Image 1 (cartoon, one colour):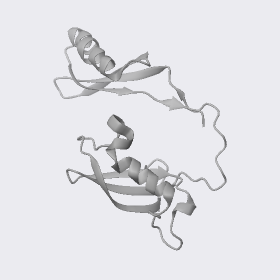
Image 2 (tube, rainbow, N blue to C red):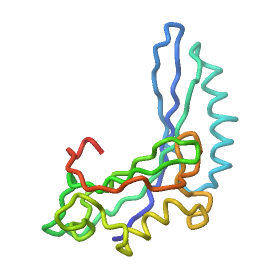
Image 3 (cartoon, rainbow, N blue to C red):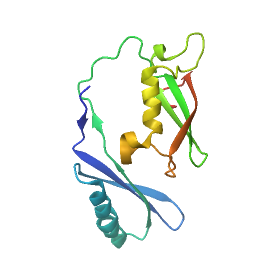
Image 4 (cartoon, rainbow, N blue to C red):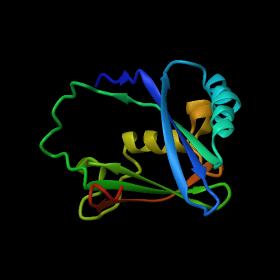
Length: 165
């Protein structure tokens, strides 16, 4: 797997009019700057420039960056993205946090059940990576309200359409 970072990031800015209709506009910006500097440029300069020429109100913005493997190896015969490992976590504020891992390996599921084998070392590493905020540091998973993920409630195999997550 050789992921190549995208050359650009996408900035999407959402505006709302008097009738509460919303519209989104976007820009590509060069990838590679410090996130704090990019955020300041967006909020302090780009948003200000947009607001100066529109009667609408900026209500949101988002920044997307990514990476892609442009020459991936072919997946194995047993791969099936509709077979998901669904991990239901609990956050410190009591909220649910669900992660569905596509094409969970059949060897990760306890025979004759739909239960993910939490004792498997790869599964334990994945769960610990989500739960232990010190592993990924500032990039550790949190809820959309920034509440830490603190426990795993259940882990099961489910078949879901590939568009359903």
